[in-house]
Image (tube, rainbow, N blue to C red; front, side, top):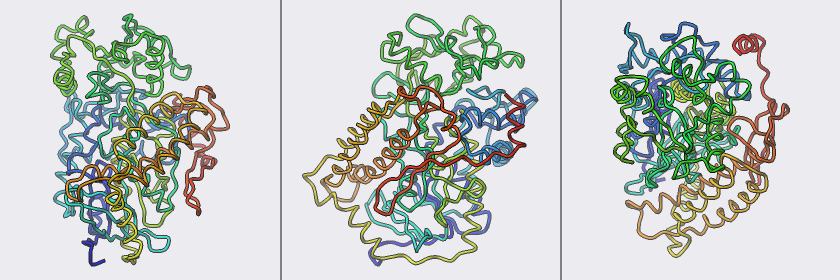
Length: 603
């Protein structure tokens, strides 16, 4: 123990995005000491990439909106395999969390009478997304950081957690290292909150930044927590496809919410060709009505470009596969067409979508006010994650909580745009609140020195195999297999082949070798990330094989239809005593009658 620097906190929060910061603020307000560990610099969290807005039924733009409609939209979008209690809490509490953010200094766009402006987004019946142009996530992080810095939170930047430490069945801390110098650290805590985000770096094409290697999912799994519905990966329909250096970078859904349309290489607006039956009454069947909706006409139906993300992604893939794609393997997203609708279209686009304008101008030399963008699906978000109690956010491991993207339940088979940011606020607050409560009721646990030493030796093993496997090559091979075999369209034979490859990659990880020393060594960092990437990749593949149907973000070519039997179960992943990964199906919790009525009333 003398070799490691030791920190003590009542509550340790791993991850400093929206969920982590909101949890830290709430725990600190409860009067406990809080430590916040982030993999990169504070302020660089992936939350800043969430551009479109925060979904909350404020009813500022359309007075017909309320929590019940939001709840019904979320359940419909998730194909009814959501945890109903989480969806209910989220819909009810999101407006208060947004107003709280406003009180802390968030500068939202405004209606003419000064209220928070809300925009249209895919799957939402009414304009519901509170936003700041197309930089909402950035404003949210700025506000939370500015508020949190006055709470006395200890921030540990550029640190990576390698394992959770347990005393019996309870989590009592974490073991990690400082990325800059490579020195090991022990964080003792009475409660731990995981808020580490997603798994996008398991795929070749992703909107996610380098930090998103499934750390929280893997840490929880290794500690004995269960993972829920890992098969449901959201491929955002619109990521950049050209030039290659920027492939996968997100193009906000706000482009479509403000009037952008999707066309193929024939100039045809192909989304009109495929409108699902359960959305037909809410979806416009002509260009004029769709445009009126984007301009705020309450009587108009939404354009088909604002259908759920899984559906739009599959439509884009179909156009490309059938030879109607753009020159670089995507389709066209065109907001410039509104020049024929608005005399001030250029000013409108620059005001509504400033980040998108600069992004395409600087990275692709395209002026989106005058020409269309090329876009295609990009791995964006995982609906699956750590299984938690819907009210407290605690996993089945005592003292271990999770919130945000690395937790699961609220989104079911598909997340609606904008629900991610309100999810971070609602359940980040709850995780911080109940982690603080747990910390007050428990003392610091004992740290097992021998287990810490084993973890340290495992982390340093690649230095002893300098002629071994290249970690970057292993990561690239993994990403290509997941992209090709467990991507947007899946088939049993391909996924079984992927599992065989994953087995070989596990052997490769044991033989990974690196050169140099512990200081400033990105090769070492990549080698340490591989175990987490493989864990989540195997969980995704096994869960996808188990769910023999197509539902939401899971589309199986060999089982192209929904199966009512699978609409009543979740897939659960857990680690067996022999170290193997186990999958089982478990019935959904029964929804109470009053919520069934809410859904019936809002079809």
